[in-house]
Image (tube, rainbow, N blue to C red; front, top):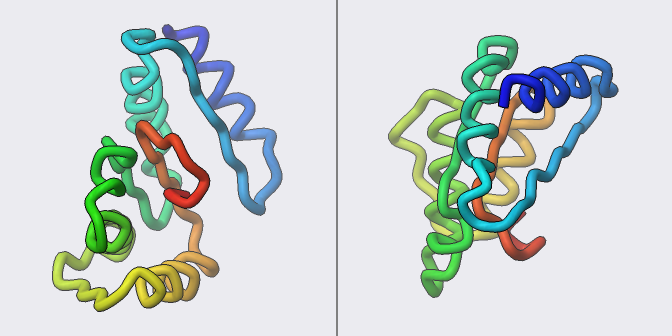
Length: 118
């Protein structure tokens, strides 16, 4: 596990200052979330905002409110403000774009299975 953590952290350190995306995939029980959490815990202090969201697939499948809830959760973590209100999915998307584009943010999304969740 330590070697995997070092490899990914090393990759992140050499990546561009723009957007960097890493996917971790394996069969169930392969230690993906443990690896992601260890990396998050090790490097999160370097970021202005950070959010670790678990069970994206499950939460996003709730009709009408799933994606809105996930966006609210991300914004609450990144802005350190639990009072964020989002009236629609599109408002949440616009707010995320405005708030995150000028910040160095670490976002971990666990258990995604569709690009719409991103």
